[in-house]
Image (cartoon, rainbow, N blue to C red; front, side):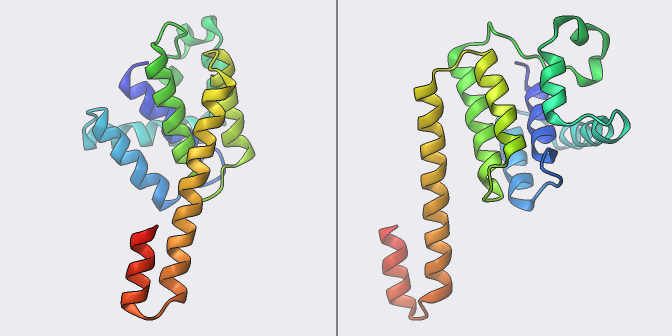
Length: 168
């Protein structure tokens, strides 16, 4: 999967539950940096995704489904994201992990986000055990973040709070 296709998939994915949260936006830009996508290309990708979403009335679920149809990919280059069964297992796992992380960034892995991940997981024939492990890790990270937030809110003594946060 080429890097701009990944970025397009990620941004469309972030929009699937109605809005892009600031933690999702932050994660998106971090992922794009790792993919060596410049700031200007990121802005172009965001604009293209918003256009696909509004002008074509297409969400991420529809985008992924259409990209799984070979004949569709050839006729609509602007919505092409490059999903290949021939991608390496590590590339597929990295894309799924990024999607799962983006899904949990706003602390809620929505039904639509899960549907996108499931479509790709089935298409790429990712083992259930790997998928479940990714979900478990993401939920553990989320639980730890919620616990840290609770500690910051409810423990007023700085040293006690810091010791508790260090334990987390």
